Image (cartoon, rainbow, N blue to C red):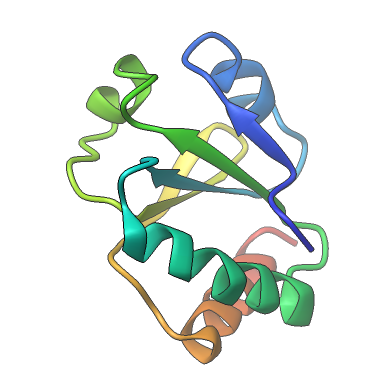
Length: 111
């Protein structure tokens, strides 16, 4: 599965905080080459065990409000939300197995 949507400061609330199910937001930047290399790993982990989890992206250079609100200073950073609450923050790159375990844990928490 690929990234479902690109978020902006103005649609974050509706797309993430008001979402019925869990949402993982990848905070990234166009100049971040590790972010580009991370996307296939993130997509593969989501395909392996991302059932019911929405995967979205936000560029920190084009959107300053939301990254600042949640203290995002490094990219890539993943923030995991469910029912408007931040459940977990993951800074830096993780391997596919670690991400699958994160998705599995998120699914268990949100049932």
